[in-house]
Length: 137
View 1: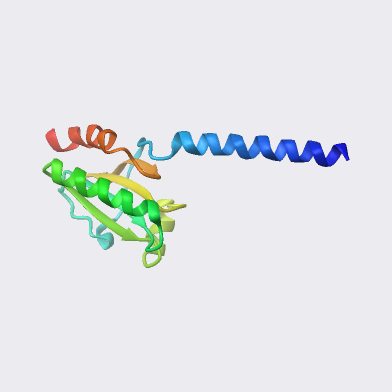
View 2 (view 1 turned 90 degrees about the vertical axis):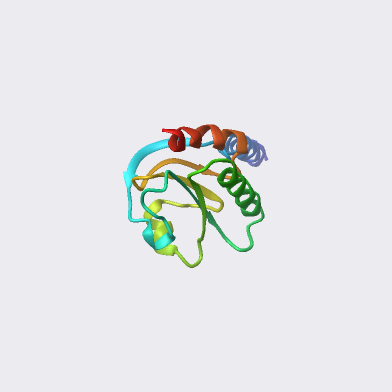
């Protein structure tokens, strides 16, 4: 009897810890080691100061919120382009870029290097602060 109760408590503690870590990371832009990848099949145009590559699926509810955030960032900052990439039709790119879930947002600089990344819904103000130096410089 005690073994089952202990297992249940351990499972609940583990699930809570995983949930708290995921909540803390969701939507937070984080710098990644800049790496160049051929993103032209996804619509990336070299020389664009900042491109927001938003990976989504048609049935993803949070993806709609990310779409709105990216569109708003693109209208507020000159030189920012928002591109939505369908995960289902671009599986090779999804695998190559390490996209594990939708929505995932990659911020790409003008040279085609992925410099920022987030999963979940980013806050507009944080996205603007992170991208502004790329378009002002």
